[in-house]
Length: 80
Image (tube, rainbow, N blue to C red):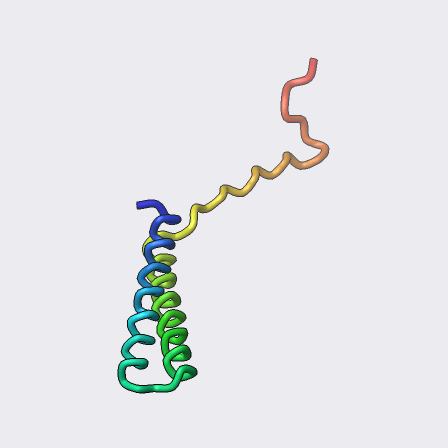
């Protein structure tokens, strides 16, 4: 799986976790602010943990540093 697909799956799992947490709180009789806050907190927690895992398992590609130019005053090829 590519890194982009992994990030999308992680965010979808976080959305589902947030919805489940909000629905459970609503079912338990909490007020609207409580179940929205719980759902949002669950989303942020699962998304953060998931993105940390993705960053650990699939580090971003390293871009090679450009080669340094030769120092001034030195010839790089034989002159004729």
